[in-house]
Amino acid sequence: MLERERHNLILKLVEERSIVAVSDLLELLGASEATIRRDINTLAERGQLRRIRGGAEAIRPRSQPHPVGMAFALSQDINVPQKRAIARAAAALIEPGESIIICGGTTTYALVEFLPNDELDILTSSFPIAAKLLATSRHRVTLPGGTVFREQNVVLSPFENDIVGSFWASKLFTGCHGINRFGIMEADPLIVQAQTQLLKRAEHVIVMADSSKLRRKSAMIVAGLERISTIVTDDGARPEELEPFHEAGVRVIVAQVSEQDEIDAAPAKCT
Image (cartoon, rainbow, N blue to C red; front, side, top):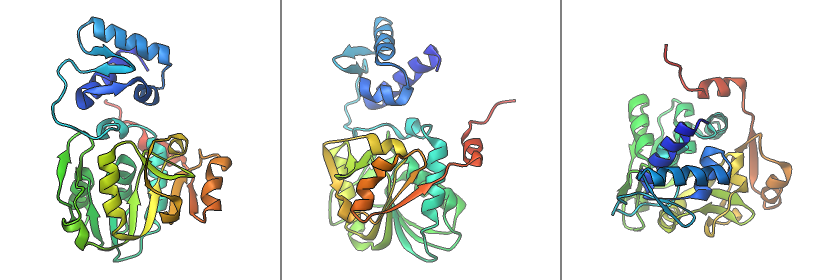
């Protein structure tokens, strides 16, 4: 990635999140820590951001709180072929006429393209997912009440007396910050609280996690492995990373990333 591209991505992320950690930039940019720190220093010297311990801060931070985690627009461009393969495999688990919950996230967003044509009852906390469903399908779509968080493009509610409490799904599809032998992990307490409410409304929990999520950790657990029915990941997963799920009796589906997934994921070229 060119230096100019790195700088643009760093500035965009800082603008959206107000504060960004070097560890987040390492994952996003695929550059060395020394390179990222040098980029932050350069941008700070130009007056485009403020250098802080362990990361960078916007010159004019937003006052509105927002969940910790990568913004939807940035995450959407990461591991796209893997997300497509996972979404295709996850969609094959849906039965005609089912009621399902689709949690917000870029991996679950990819699921919409592969949903069966049969009319489904779908509850989703994601604005992009709801918009795509309304534009491309005849599925019945329900949105929960709560606070809108623009960076993640989700509606989050910690309350039990909203419409979520009246919805029942045979299957829930969710992404995650990370997943390992301890269970589903998220990086923000508000997301954990909202996800916990959704998990109460589904019989089967299906986690859609690309193989990089098997190597990510957090201090916050949404649910243990005993609550997970199935995990769908990609062929980049290592056998030792999948072993804890097998031992816990979780069904593991490894989606093969095809050449067509790579082609479909490639950005369109201007002519």
